[in-house]
Amino acid sequence: MQTIVSCGKRWGTVKAIASKSHIHRLLICAALSDKKTVIKDVTFSADIMATVSCLNGYIADVFVDYDTITVQPYKKAAADCVLNLNESGSTYRFLVPVACALGEQVSFTGSERLSHRPLSPLYDLLKKHGCTLSEEGVFPLICSRKLEPGEFVVPGDVSSQFISGLLFALPLLDGDSVIHITGKMESYPYIKMTIDVLKTFNITVEQDEQSFYISGNQQYISPKEVVAEGDWSNAAFFIGLGAMSEKGIQVENVNPNSLQGDKQIVDIVKWMGANIEQTETSIFVSGEKLTGARIDASHIPDLVPILAVLGCAAKGETVIYNASRLRLKESDRIESIFNMLKNLGADIKKTDDGFIINGTGNLKSGTVDGANDHRIVMASACASSITDGNVTINGSHAVHKSYPTFFEDLSKLNSEK
Image 1 (cartoon, rainbow, N blue to C red):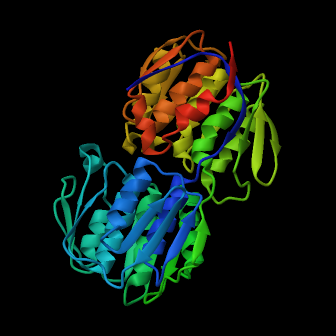
Image 2 (image 1 turned 180 degrees about the vertical axis):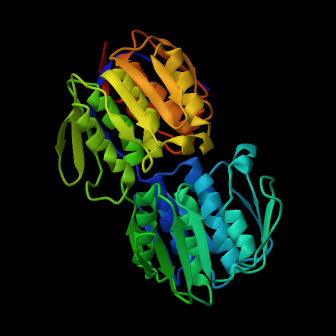
């Protein structure tokens, strides 16, 4: 699919969709609970439907109705299920440890790209603790034998999803466990979100600076009804558009007290010179002159595509670093961000873990490859705010992974060259 996005500044109001990260976690906890849970204010995307599909018929009956999901858990997991992950890395890394904890043989399948996304060191830890897994990097991945409790040592610079997957699984085991993190812990806000959702479902996790302590034989207890939060990760694209617009954009349905790490976009655009007005449920962002900044992306890798666009919109040098894990996303985002912005005339250099951008405030019109990556497509569309002509995006259908109505919401904003 190809989409042509007209150039020009944008202003107006948009409502943030529900957080994909939050919904994944709510769904898994609900499916492991003692009784029915209703999840409200849901936004559906390909990744969320992957989790729904995997849970349904395996450990729960899952019913979808407009913006609500009802989850009725089973007392025992079904055996010999085949779970299709599609392209959802979150679903993959969350559910493999859960399947091992439940002990029934299950097969995971999905897209070829997903099969090549790394599962180690989680794969090695699960095997070390009693599970039998088929060859890594090839679908189907077959899991059998029950996970054993104990000590799990995880490097801090791997995906936080590995740690979250263990946090879902370990309370189900017969004994106590501990997760020790070695080195700097990256994407910690996502782990905090997992712990917070677990707490909502009566699961306790104790922690100190580098370790998480999980008692076994805990029971997930349903809160009966929960509400999905607005999504800071996808709202960030509209916040970025607002920072490039003198008239500004108001983003509604965002919680400033959220545990979502990507709310840091607010602080970053403020550092770069944007104006911020915030309430308990919304944020208004406008900007006229942005300046470059040094940005540590270790906890906010999903923000890097829009931050790179903002670096081009700003005057002066922007350095984005500690972003090496971008190579392991839906695309190699170091390459895809570089190629996208280079095609639009950016003065950008790749580094081992990010970018150096010499921002001039402007880009050129052009055609870019969405790289089958939802965040590259959305960042490309936002770049049109500072181009001298239209931006043509090949593979724009990739937004369906997380934000199917992105272009519809973008079109509702006012625009002028």
